[in-house]
Amino acid sequence: MIDLRSDTVTRPAPAMRAAMADAEVGDDVYGEDPTVRALENRVAALFGGRHAGLFTPTGVMANQIAVRLSVAPGEELVLDADAHIVAHEDGAAAWHGGIQTRTALSPRGLLEPADVGRLLRPGDAHTVGTRAVAVEQTHNRGGGSVYPIEQLRAIRELTADAGVALHCDGARIWHAHVATGTPLPAYGELFDTLAVCLSKGLGAPAGSVVLLPADRMAEARRMRHRMGGAMRQAGILAAGGLYALDHHIARLADDHVHARLIADALGDAGLDVVAPETNLVLVRLSEPRPDAATVAERCRAAGVLVSVFGPRLIRIVTHLDVDASAAAKAAEAVVEAAA
Ligand SMILES: *Cc1c(COP(=O)(O)O)cnc(C)c1O
Image 1 (spheres, rainbow, N blue to C red):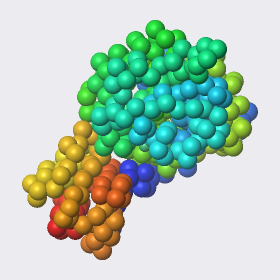
Image 2: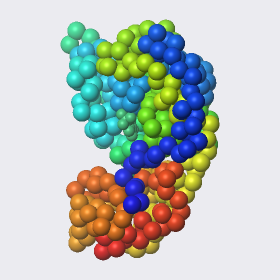
Image 3: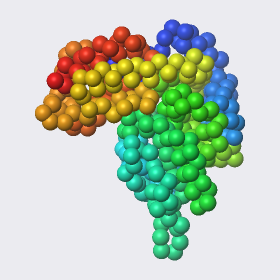
Image 4: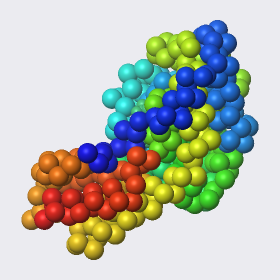
């Protein structure tokens, strides 16, 4: 099977497993796991050293800790309407934090500064207050779309003027960095909190890191504990993350090439493809083509797995377990399935 459903399906290769097996560990709830500490410090340093890092088992937990640090129950968080935090976290911001969201439909999921300006509310005796804005880099439902750094800076200016926090759901921020050449610290300096994922494109088996102001760390550690995410000898997982940071960032460029290869093949066959900017390819299936479930089923029969992303939308994701020949084969299967 060529599995293009997500970049979460990768399996750790022998060298990563060896690094994990050899990891020095301790009890991280006591703050005594040296490998977790090393990972948290490494990620903080990569983004410029302004933040402290906290290891979490999942990206959802990293996002939820971040937004709860800035937004209290009954207060408001502004995002685009298709944000992962809105669409794919089972209402966690409401469930855990009693947080109200205010959203705008945005081109490819990228919030426009004018919309942010319009959506921010001051919070007074009569009106709920916006406490944070969240952006997603790259944007999942937008098809791996990338915020230009100028657009992020314009949003940062608005949130700074309003005294509102800015969070980045950066599960795939590594891809934006590789696709645009924007240095990671240029992203780090814009955000109050930033969640990054080690188990998507980077290929570790589990784990995210949330970057936050060092003086909020005690609070963040308590939130993680409350959510059931305080792990013990987690250095075994963190070692996979450290290995991924050392070996799997620059190679994301290959995934972007493979995504373009697939998109070009589908486009040449007359399919309606959203031009990929990174490693996600969205394909719209308009009548009289079969619907997304049918296409995915036919692909499966041909040995290729893709995601149904809407009734007439499929998502194809390239990752480190897919080489150029697998990408070419997959493109052929999709073209046939969608005929
Ligand atoms: C996958 C993803 C997450 C959450 O990650 P999990 O580790 O699956 O909890 C958050 N944000 C975005 C944009 C994602 O794609």
